[in-house]
Length: 558
Image (tube, rainbow, N blue to C red; front, side, top):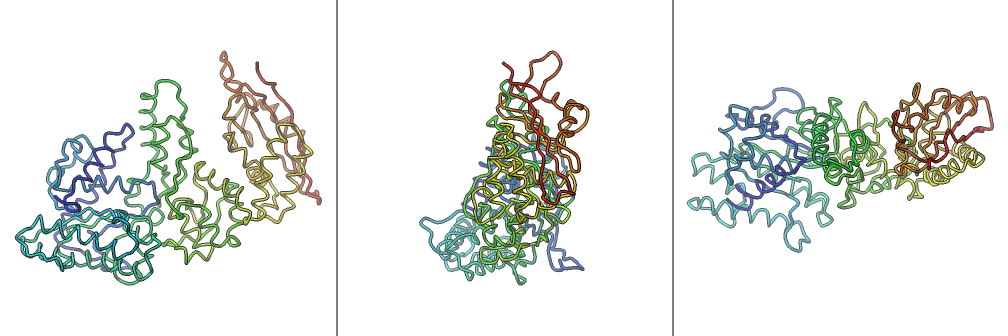
């Protein structure tokens, strides 16, 4: 047992995760890995671009907050000899398999978390020296009869152990493999040296029983030659395999919500639909919906739907990417904030600060880091948690030009609507339509709806805004559900080549306001005024004038 070799820390962290109320059993990933461990030799692919890659080398890349470290700790705790972990695993899904006992705590595991730094680290030399020294110390203490010298490279020491200890092998579980590439002290030469370090440690080594590696950046980005081409790489965008083990799928969130209902007997502030709105929106290669797992768990634990997107540096800041080439993407930001998917060629690598030049490079990086979802050739903002981040940026960054100006008007638009100030509403809508923006031309209600999302952007702070929600007899274009139940509730109907009066009449005729009245015999949940808002536009009107009407359907309840 050592700092890296069969270390107890992975088990300790897994034990903590296992004990959580909202723990999700993902141990079936082990059934994907056991066949790799049982291979007698490294089988090379016969055809295609993966020629020479070995099945026993697995690299999983995902955005932050998608459970990569939780999975790495669990895998190390299962295979590693350091601690007997049967008490936890006996109750989990992996225990149903016939090989379960055969591999439980039966392997040497070298578990390295690459985001751990030496004291006062200011150079790559200090960083890599710590890793090599600690691993050499582990090997020296564990195999005292093998003549390991301080001057040995770690791969030479491991080869000695393999040679003199009857073919002793090791499973490598390497977490945050790309951490060094984000550090200011690491020059390009240092990054190349680290890539070669991994290659020397792992590639074509008989002592490697399996290598499981996780990170954010796809390996292809930093292995331009053949250094790490032995890895089979699995990303969210390009590969379906392993997808269900990272992030939560619908059935898992259903189960977690059932636990929440039992745990939170009263004063529940989280709804199942709220979890979908706030944290869903990512998709796997196969099209399966994926939730941000960290945010779901925190929302349930805190009994609060909120923004749990945390920042740990510039790579977690939206404007780091957008600001790299604002002119290339500012028009697209307007479309994205309006909930319109944007066509993009998402590449298989993430861009670094020196390489964020083109629109596709910027969007590729934003997908890799989890800011955007990628599906069917388009990028989009996945959920409310991220939409709020985009909205915050759009209202703060003047360099976004017209998008910035439009979003700044959105607070005034909400105030005017509540006041029934249709002149101001029409002025703002005309300003939007006359502005040089990708949204200036609309010929149907769907395109008009996109403008509405932008001009009511600030309303997201105080309303849950639903598009084409079922209400009364049919579906209404927009319903604004106030977070404060005594605030005004707003129903918006859009019309192209019809009048605002017709829009309001439809709201009344189809009884859309019933959505706020509550069930028969019960007091209404929403006690503020109910406003019917009709917004109309004529394609034939060359002056691009809009018509607005606001009518109070119900006064505030006392």
